Amino acid sequence: MRLALQVINGLEREGLIRRPAIGGAMALLFHDEPVVTFDLDVFCLLPQSGLLVSLEPVYGSLRARGYQAEAEAVVIGGVPVQFIPAYNELVTEAVEQAEERSFDGVPARVLTVEHLLAIMVQTNRPKDRERLASMAGRVAMDRDRLTAILSRHHLLSAWKALNFAC
Image 1 (cartoon, one colour):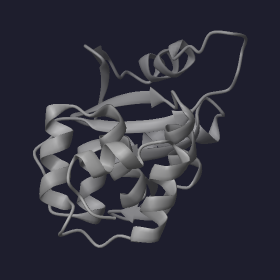
Image 2 (cartoon, rainbow, N blue to C red):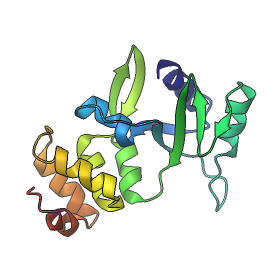
Image 3 (cartoon, one colour):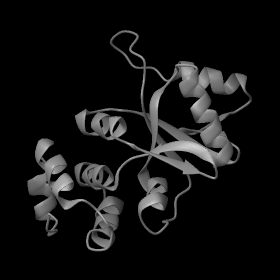
Image 4 (cartoon, rainbow, N blue to C red):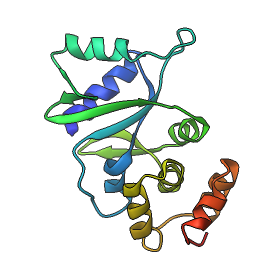
């Protein structure tokens, strides 16, 4: 993952992506017990170039460096990396407020645990509900911050419907 993070940081320096932040299951390495995952989800902001958002400049730069796309990811140093442009207000906020961390000496941003939980509530996939159930009472979090995020993005009732207390 070290090489993947170095390449991602290079894409940011080149201006192809802004504020890349680790999300998804890989982000849980920084907040909770590791879970099985096969890819590195990198949420990011992209430069606006009209009405449509395109990852082609990112993929083109990676191809020029010898990295190939496989399905929805680009394999960098053996790690499938999926670039996910911030697609709504919650994810944009999560990227903007991601925490500065380090992995094996390489700087990285990671979504906060509160934003990870809110995104899982919003996506509401079966695997997200399972992770939420296992994390809700165990992971250290700022409950006031989580409540504020859930309220701001109209997810508090969905959180409560999952029978979790805030």
